[in-house]
Image (cartoon, rainbow, N blue to C red; front, side, top):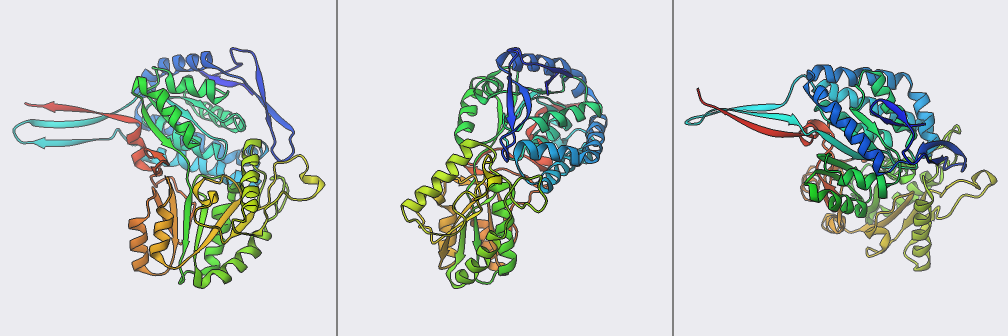
Length: 476
């Protein structure tokens, strides 16, 4: 599979490729060109040449491309989902859902794109003022491997609808589906050069996207340390930035919660995509009066999750995506065990069996009674491991929930309107769920506070992030 630059499939300037492995089997499922700085520069040139015509198009005509692409993505969702499972590892049901989610996002921005946004002001003594919004120009997008289709949709949908052109870098462990989706967009009528995909490592391709002075904005999703480096690299050219970084989302279960519903919320919120979601439940706080029943029910559900190859029928959780993530998760659990930080109620190890031998599998893990100062609470555990602690009440819950350098998401489970009002006001997070967790429809602005990043994706506000204002004062 080749990079897509100016509407053409291209090899890297280096002529080299890198393999993409199935994390469930270790098998090579494809190759991608090993791009570098020169490939990014070629993509920037193509994006610059395409910008004038694309930005001048009627917004409705731009939107039609998104609509037709969404139709084709839905028609091919099983094919695309199969490719996504092969390179990323998630169960095929989750993969197809993600592909459909990409289509949902394109349809949403199609629906928003009836005309350019702006405002009119009648200022006495100054005349008439029109505030116009215009596209920024060439934008860069750097996306991770955990939810590549959805996150590509967040960045590409808003940027294209606003009239920008893009240089996109997928993750090296999951680039193939992104290239296919870009090809579908071009097949739906996207002109050559409007969307360019360059594959390769972050230290070359990603850094050139951040540094290149021709790029006006960079949207990055990934680890917080890498996000800081992106910000430093982008600073000399004063690029606009959207940084969606790490999260350590707390889930608070109050004593009046619907316990079965909250247990199911944990199962989906923590173990979906093998726990490799920035907004996954990563810290569980349960009122002590219901803790015994909650742990009993949750243990049963965690142990019932079927782990295996995402293509196999009945599998509820696939492997971790890459060896670095696998080593980090196993290391954190081993360290907690050595320090006697809580009781491993379920999981805590790799599964046994010949079928797991070459894959990056780790059992869904529940650790109860974890001390509040444990690294399992302070660090982002990007995998299927859930630390839990009991709490005495809402004051303690909010103090613990906010005692983190992250502030991406949080949830509270209760039937009490006063608790809901206070929790939604005081939780330091970019998104707060009540009696649910994890789901983010395209209409909802998404982003974090503190070290979870800056800027917002999703929703109508995302279009504003990809435009700049021009004020026009008229006196007749």
